[in-house]
Image 1 (cartoon, rainbow, N blue to C red):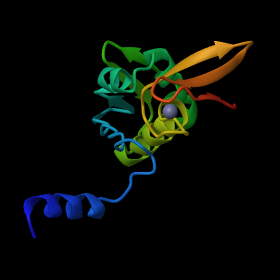
Image 2 (cartoon, protein in one colour):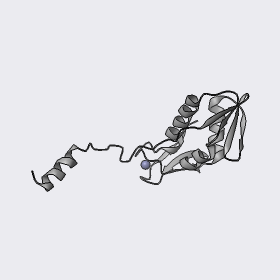
Image 3 (cartoon, rainbow, N blue to C red):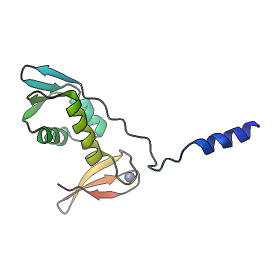
Image 4 (tube, rainbow, N blue to C red):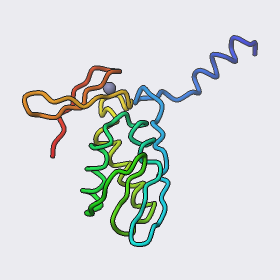
Length: 133
Ligand SMILES: [Zn+2]
């Protein structure tokens, strides 16, 4: 087998990526207990990674966890004790719903409002997906 054939063979063996993009890596939550509170220490970095407003992400997390809290610098302070695994699960849900394009699977998206409807607009493939409440 010559080099060209090897390359062809290699190409054939690479499975087609139907989603058309690499999987978006969700950063792990870094949490710290502080008395009756839980501090999400890398909250700011997470919001930046998702390219979303801190307010949008904090509202979602507080709503999903059913608690109150506030943003303090780059941290999100949650009232109550929450396991890191639970917070990671919510972060996954958030990216699936508000960050990843359901058409092409890429995270290059923006939230837009059109006629009062919130849309997830993909900058990679142009898909516009309405978000339901
Ligand atoms: Zn897309």
